[in-house]
Length: 127
Image 1 (cartoon, rainbow, N blue to C red):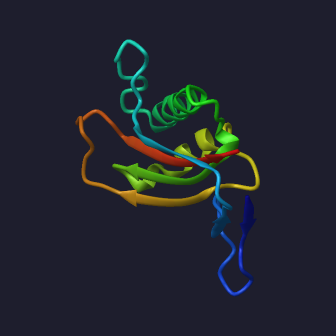
Image 2: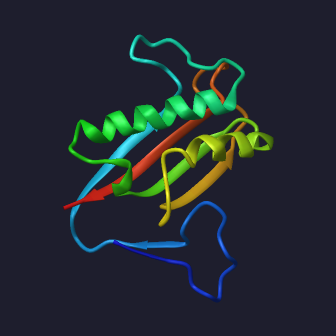
């Protein structure tokens, strides 16, 4: 994988502009939400706790296919309140380090359940 941030684009905050991948195994992980293994919501009304659970779930989903968070090339993040971006980033930064994956972040009016604050889907590439 090659991560790049072209100098003709603004400096990114928390993501890479481009991640180049040469033919390998690709994993598409469905949107992960803040439910524990028993299906209970983790962190009602707490973006950082929900985001932490989401990234734990993402790590678990990838591990089931012998992949890791280091293999993630693209994240798509759905937040119900973009003013909570700092809390999201605090949680994300405990799971990802440079070079960061490409990322899109979208504020949505609601998710599948009214108590969910965040959902994250991922694309990962491994050998």
